[in-house]
Length: 305
Image (cartoon, rainbow, N blue to C red):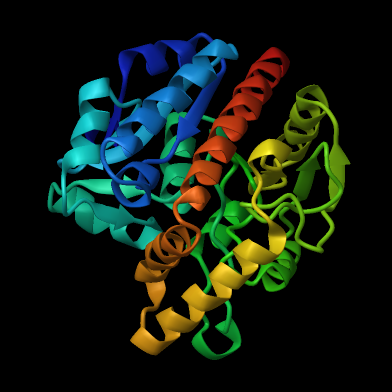
């Protein structure tokens, strides 16, 4: 029955059958994260970084209702150029599939489709979380619930700094999701290496990470793991500059009544505007860095299978 919905690229399918390392990638960054052609260039560069580090990339999206695992260059280009591609989380998948629409996957939906295909490692920019003001709005990303349920490790630069990082940490703790710092004791905040919040564990190598993941899943402890990998120092933004930009953007979003799935693209776009575009370059570099660690983690995990 699953074959009716799932379309796995032959290269990815062969790698999975042979136990080779594969890294899942999301597609929201292509359709909603950056302007064309920067979005396509970045997506293809991320794929090449994964290959350079010994793994097979599998960019995920929904095209004409099919769950696609491993996009071709032409399909990446299509996503980058086409307007009206739907930002797709868990709740959206059935309707996009049933109506044969095009969907760009978020962290949550990428995890779901990766798990259906048998992929255990996913590299992205930053995870969603608890939004600022959530005590009133209850605006909490589906990414957090997915991390609690779905057996995929998510390599990211922490949660997006437009969020309430403290409440996001609390939510993940409640759900039993390990938040692991890759070579850091402090949870990174996307554009910066510091947030003021500690991780649960600091891990210094992909080998140790892979062993912890295998133990987790062997023991039947369902759910993913947040592998928080800080942005390289040379690309991080000034802590005060980025926080002031975020506060300005959040205030404007409140005034305009922008909430839900529209809030993150609006806030990131506004921060980019306020910082003169430097936040976009930081965003790209942290994704490259996560792809590298994700590939190395997938390699180590494949050795343990």
